[in-house]
Image (cartoon, rainbow over all chains, first blue to last red; front, side, top):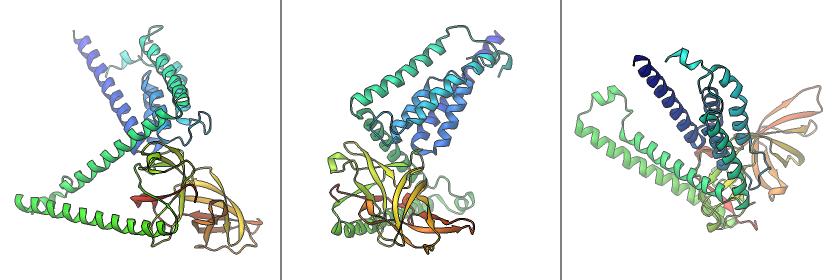
Length: 98
Length: 269
């Protein structure tokens, strides 16, 4: 029972951090400097299999990318988000719970 | 937090991995849909972003005017009725100052409009959030803004400078790419010499100018490709005796971040 409680608390703690980082990342795309959003994406990808990271990348590019075509200029944040979240998969598999 | 439970191999084919895969596929689908729709999804995202920015700006102004973060010592010296009166007086003063500033900018824009046709548009985004050197203005296709339109300052005290070009247009918002966006290239003229500017972001650029050209800080920088309009001033000149070129740093003499409005020229200009 005690172990179940501790597991629930750690889950909620991790979930709260994830929600906070994701919220800061999505709002930061509008208000903050790009490095802050990149840091949120990296932290989320380090700790979680964060499906919101690719969505954060495309949100950033849709807001700021100065083109109506797909390839010029390159949608940097979308590509970086996918690379980060999948590139860190082996590390997450090795060290972390989810 | 239980460290031991954090260091555990996840089960094969976990739900998290499937969700991540679905999100990645969704991103690709969204990009494809946006391309098929001609940028409709991007325009919707930018409209939403502009609304979020405006809401945040209004909230920030309300928080500042409410006196929540006033110093503790100042609050201790006031009674409740004086605090309420002071907040009202500050709000009225701030509103008057904002209207005065807006009037000054609009008068300056009107002077620019006398010479060149266009529309005054408010800046509706942060100027520092874009990794591509872009920002949003609150005017779009419905207001006559088109891709390629030049965007200028309207500050009469420092003259009118071209700050960017419209690169994407929605119904009521437009995305402007700064002339000096990172890694942007632009042909310019300094003291009669043709140079190639390299954008550095934040209203700054640099160029290599032959040492035979006598360039000094404060010299005007114009661009023939933009109708000979001013695009900046020389900020600093660095010369190495071993080099045939001087490195010239160009800047906008106006803090665009402090401007509430810009002037978008009609495309025929």
